[in-house]
Image (cartoon, rainbow, N blue to C red; front, side, top):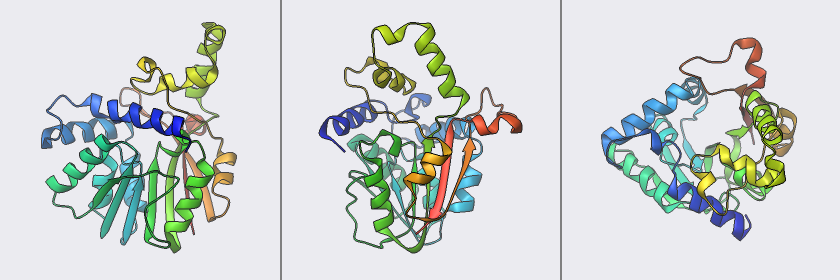
Length: 253
């Protein structure tokens, strides 16, 4: 990742770790994690089922652990876990949760494009809402390949280009004449909580199902499915699901 993009990402998610604004309890307490978990899976009610069906029983790495909500679920299933994030605050939040729950996993600061692990270390690699913020996502995909054991699997969540949500953002960009005062590159990151207040906004990419598969073209059995956040507890009807906001990509080395 370029230094500028890396710095913007670290500052954005150090200030606003994903999901923490949904919790009102003191940060790092069991109540804080419980509130964050409840709000996350009310918004993404399909994700726990998807995680439970995917998590391998061996060693699993999460790339971009945020505040540790998904990692806690992974750690409850896998024999051993590791987590990395650019943000020291996110690493502390994840490690605190692992310690509170008595899980043996280790979280550390690291870059998705330069993972600090030997080749063929993990049975699974998970990353949700992270790789579309990297300057060189193809390098991150190559790193996932490198650290996976032969036969190991990955699951990655990316923002979906061909979604209702993305179409809404394009319409707003045009209708409000935002294009007169800012580039699409600066406008799109406003979807991230708190990003509108930042001078240097994080990089945001959108992927079609085809481009998501191409990103992981080196892998075998690459498959995609589209999901969407719930709105007031209601999911998109099945016939609109292909227009959801997340492309979930799975495959194996």
